[in-house]
Length: 400
Image 1 (spheres, rainbow, N blue to C red):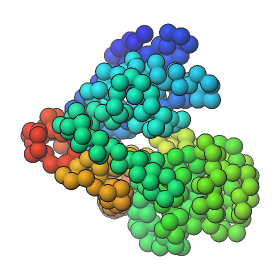
Image 2: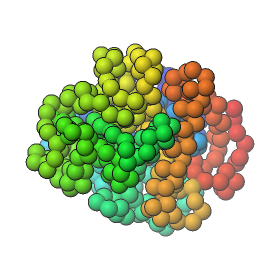
Image 3: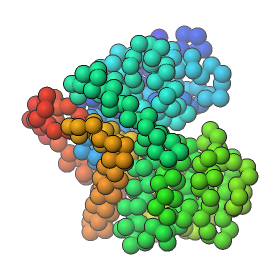
């Protein structure tokens, strides 16, 4: 059963599963543009308010990135370890199918993957979870397939689709190191999480020579006591379902919370909401925090970090990789390569981070406040296609 509710978000679809009784939601934060985008998650205890907050953050990501689309988010309150997960997702996606066909560009989020979601959509006669992009970009079926197939192209150990969000998080870290004037090969980083986002960031950071000295999943941490780099290729090869292997060749295992006690240049929360509370903000010994996870730092902690001189790159910036990869994929007039998509994410993310940190220093405001200013300055193009030139197949008159 679907119930439409009134709220500050432009569209809220509430789903009640007829077989198991769980709740699910699709929230479209704004209808300012023809397209909205955001991931679908499976999370035990998920609430409508959480989905609304995540959708609003997605809109901010679009505004900061300069993409002519709005934010959305969807998910079900369901234990992802239950055997009925696939069918639960199938019933939920079937309920929101009209939005997927016309407006909602769905992506993977917590406890979902693109192949998993695409397989369910295929059962429902939907060619791709991104099919709304074809609709709003005015692509033929052949043009769209040529682009979307690029996400399956391998880059090292994984596909472009799996690494794209992590590449943006890594780029945000690189931008932060550039601002701090710390060479990548001398930088020390700790990552909280080792799921798709965190693992992707770890790959790109390691590839460039950054020393990742600590990693944690929700069960344990792995920290090198001498402050030396962990064997990231080994961890990537042997990680299963976002968990670190139990027999890493270097580092010492401990509790997940141990990563808060280790000094480093950049700490990257890339797993759960509210990972950095006020208590952590008062004691953590880092020069910067780059937030991959949505809503990773509680509001009180943001001010505490700022007062301590710790740079904080908020989720709306460091989490732009997925959105910017879609721009890198769909904006060019000709088909890009996978490397060109990653390069687009890297170049644009670094520029955004540098701009926000410079303005933050000059104006004495939190980076998040600067980011919100940039969002408020963004122009709206309600009838345009989301990616690429304004003049091809769309009107170019903005709405302020």
